[in-house]
Length: 340
Image (tube, rainbow, N blue to C red; front, side, top):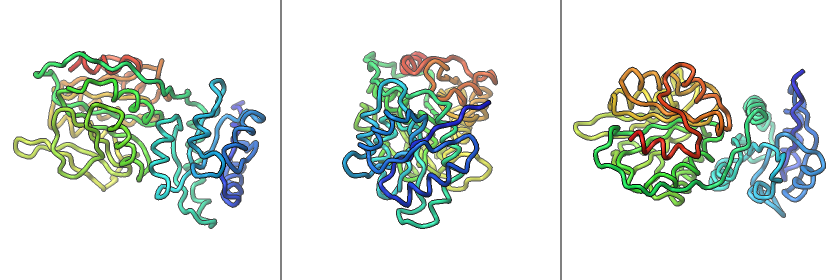
């Protein structure tokens, strides 16, 4: 039988705790083993109840959500899903993702209303994914200091990732050399509202120029563009320039931003000079896009199972025969540089 997922609900709102308990208790295979009103009580309940997954509010008295993440035990820590109000907690949410939270579920409102019940399906799905995921590492990687060729074999890097992606990007980007001779575009599955803060934090931690995607942004060496949550990111040709364009039409894509659409657009513009990278993530987004890069004669790198928080997206690309090489995250910066 499938083991029951033990969940601890942490929120300073009594109404939110009530709703989350009801939402989760009515879901097969999930048991709410307790609730906590603040971070200090959460740490006590974690030690007492050994939950598998934590739903974590960020703004709480005594000890906030970031304090809880920093204080989790090194062994047998629960996986963490942030349950947050985006407008109030964007900076905190981005920090929480970098600190080890696996995902974010946005509260539809900060008020004590029945709207909170609307997050049921998304929250249950993300809890099930988190339960199967590995704990993400937040350890820094050694930067690559070697100077790169001014005449690389590829003219663009496109990267796709999902669950575990914020931690992976937080480790990977600072390890890449400051003189990266090509631009990089990133599609990360993340709720709307958090990418501006995450891009700013990645920019501060990296020698590269990391920005949230803007319509018409011209691509250049050393620029890293992070797709906006909820919006597709594509690259287009405009004369001799290569520009970023934003597509708010969701179409048939399962995720926005879509890794497939980003990869396909890059392959159409750069053909064999496209380098695709698929990191940790649930599902198969990126498989069709990797096929497009493969058909165009480009190169695709995938993260190995050894380091993937969720070995879904990279596995689909590899098993479909579109991965030219794989590497654990610890060696991915070197693999990127070597293939450039």
